[in-house]
Image 1 (spheres, helix red, strand yellow):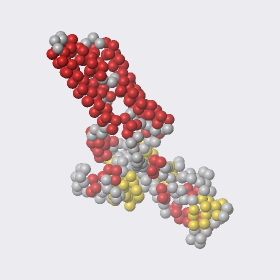
Image 2 (cartoon, rainbow, N blue to C red):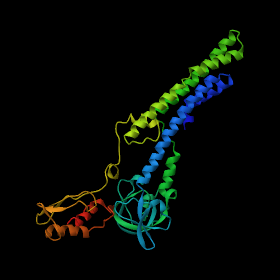
Image 3 (tube, rainbow, N blue to C red):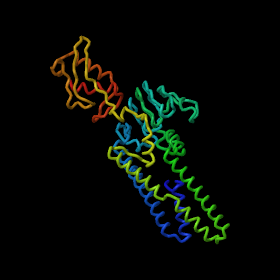
Length: 363
């Protein structure tokens, strides 16, 4: 990508002309400048790509799959067409799934279709063909990448990865060229201006020399030398090294930048919109106060979905078994009327229901 920069192309042309005219010193200096720019940019972007790959490995996408009549947790990338997948509140749909069981199932498809209202899913088949104009009509299909907001369901995998509807959309997005940053636009404009002025200098000096009676080859060599000398081969080095230093400083603050020009663009940002739930926060809800029907109030300590370190107390007294029947009863009811479960500290279901499950272990 560095060689698509007009300024780099101009420097390459200057190096080639310097070699043809016998000015090897200029050719070597320009070649070294280009090598420094390309190497620094490549190393920084390569390190960023590797860091992003390591981050993606830290949080692998898992799903609940039924194989050999046993429900197990597997990586979403290991799913194949024909697998049976279970969906619960809060789950990210791991593949395109045809539903054969749906209980009050509602799925947020805003990231896929743009609809802000969750789509109600059922097992009824649709007669509408599978195309991008009729995705909202496919009530018995759960699309990869969407989020289960409430309810539960089961279905058969019919498409994974690039063979899913989300994969088709992702392919269309990759086909679109990303817009250039303000710095890239400025550098492109500068490169085009320098090219124009260089050719203008060559033509002007050559014509003046020929008119004054000098040899054409001699005047051409002088004009090319002046044009090459006018090109600032140090400018790409200064810009690239400056951006690389910015990337390095941001990396120390645990910020990964994929492309060097993004650093300059980030300096122009005034508002950052970021996903909070599950990104800045852990998406774990905690019930800390319980009020029974008779007015008895209990305080619950502990954070998250693990029982360890948590305790339920009424006026400083620990709630153990039926020592405080009203409190114990309301927690039991909350656990019975609940479709969420906690497995190894991870919630399977809706957070608003999952926050009640650990309270039973703390009573």
